[in-house]
Length: 360
Image (cartoon, rainbow, N blue to C red; front, side):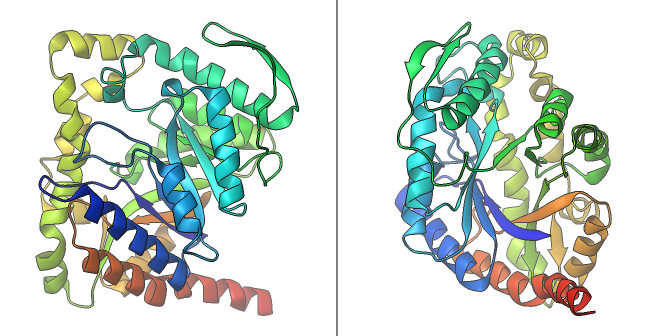
């Protein structure tokens, strides 16, 4: 199992955007120093509390110059809002600048992004499908042509070419069954939403695992959970409770832009019914105890979290646990503390067992 870090770059009101971005950069440097495998950030605009991660490729290119081994992954590029011919070149250049340490998540995007981006919601699925076709052609053909509903190009050559061949590894994620089926068929890795308990995820992940098996692929599930560690449970709650509640509230905050009934009907009709279901809003009503007990977050001593990770590993198909160490306005030193304790006290419990098995 790999161990990564996932970050939305949630930014509370009043927080300097400059300070926030540079705190994340220092956390990436620290993650590299202590041995995390990959750092993932989302691609998201317009809603500060949810995210100010407007250009993850730029962040990765900068972070690569300050780190040695950690990999970088966008989670996810919002394909319907991108020109895929241009995005292919940007991905390739970033792959070069990171010395082949880039991975790419490709998604349809959150429903609330389309209004501010001036793109009709009903175009999201067909644009997404065409963009995937084009990216695959761009990275596997020296020159390609494409005729679609939204993109028509002839004899296009995408430059530069990526360092990794034929392209950085692809991932996707979301809440619709069709996404899990497609990821399994293509052999992509898949992100699971960071807020949903395991019992909600079992069905979609089963679709993914079966599709992987049917097409000869190994499942690669990236399981995301907020984490906070200390040796004293009372200290943990005092230090993290407000930020943990904020994490859920900030994730749900863009839903406020989708509240009128006409918009909800449109969401249901155009494949974004999850955003009209009230699921995100319901999470904001959970108490600290419920969040911890339902393992929406792994909160506790390192020994407790080691057991939670072991239980997760036993479910099968989990390629990576991506911890969220920065969330809900958590202070920089607290994020660094959790990364340090996780690297010192949790990761070795699994890597040492692998080494022992290999030695035997």
